[in-house]
Structure formats: C-alpha cells, structure tokens
Length: 224
Ligand SMILES: N[C@@H](CCC(=O)N[C@@H](CS)C(=O)NCC(=O)O)C(=O)O
Image (cartoon, rainbow, N blue to C red):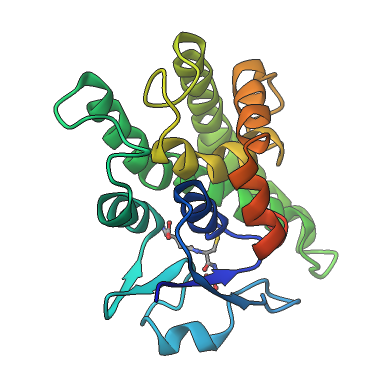
C-alpha cells in the first residue's frame, strides 16, 4: 500500500493531486501544523530525519523531496502518463521545471516569507524600526528584484505554451503549483499582474483531480 504523509496546507497537496490524476489508490495520513509556529509536528521525524512533508511510503521505502517523489511515482505507476516521451524536447523542459520549482523559485519566496514575518513580528518598540529596516534592506537588495525576475520568466514561459512542459499537462505543472500560487495568490511576486500564470492557475484548479485532492487533504496553499 502506498501511504502519503500529508501536512495540512503544504507542498504535499502536490502528491495527492498527482495520485488523483493517475487514479492510484493511496492511504492518507494527515498531520496538523503547530498553530503558533506553523511547523510540522515531531511525528514526521519518526519517518524521516528532516521531518518535512511530503513523505511517501511505498514498496518498503520512505520517499522525501516533492520533485523526487513525483518523478518516482510517475515512473512507477504512470505507464507513460503525465510525462513527455523520453528523448523529446518536451522531456528537457519537463525536467527543468521539476527542478526549478524547489531549486530556484522557492529560495527567494522563502526569504520573502521570512522578511514579511520579521516586519510583523512583535518586538520591543525601540528595536522594531531596526528589525523592519533590516527586513526592508534584504527585500530591496535581493528579494524584490529576484521575485520580479522569476515572475517575468514564468509569464514568458506560459505565453508560449499552455503547460510548463509544452502542449500537454504533466507532473511539472503539479510541481510548479505551490510556488506559482505563492507568487500570484500570496502576492509575493511584487504585485505585478501575472495574467498568464493566473490563467494557468485557473486551468489547474479546474481539473477534477486537483479538486479531489483538496477534498481529501484539505485546502491547498501555503499557511503564511
Ligand atoms: N524541498 C522540499 C521542502 C519540504 C518542506 O519544506 N516542506 C514544508 C511544507 S510546505 C514543511 O514540512 N514545513 C514544516 C517544517 O519545516 O516544520 C520538498 O519539496 O519536499
């Protein structure tokens, strides 16, 4: 039996969604975030030393890292679905976006989450302006320009084709869903309009499998 260890409102929605797309049966274990810190519960550490979601147990293995899990599940259960044919130009794009989501796009999004948290964090009144100034400097010197560049890059990619790997929906779209939602719906892209990414988000949310994953695992999206 395949088990998905799913943390509420997290990246692990992607795994549920992929399995719904493939119509593969799975057992679902749902974990709640700590209401104060929003961190995962320690029980996830019993499965994997880093204690992060998603985790999947299958064939006697514990799998971590969402892109690696998606690739493994598509290879193991996909029977050719949700990935371009090996050796095709689309397969190159597919691999690129599968890695780009966590490797390039998530880091500046995480920095933005930290600077936003710092700006709102309770602090003694005499320290507050300093904390805000430091967070503002990080954003001005790094985060804002990085996220604007990523937003433009994604807009350009989706202007050429409806899905990240080309004309067909694939697991690369599943992997890109979490950071693109943070950029567009979380307002972390700097406020510039992203019509192509917004239209793509509407297309993914209209998919029955996306909706089925939300019915089983709860609403998608980052908690912060
Ligand atoms: N790059 C990893 C990131 C895993 C990760 O950071 N997961 C978050 C959920 S969105 C988590 O478990 N956060 C809770 C915590 O770190 O305590 C992946 O894509 O699987």
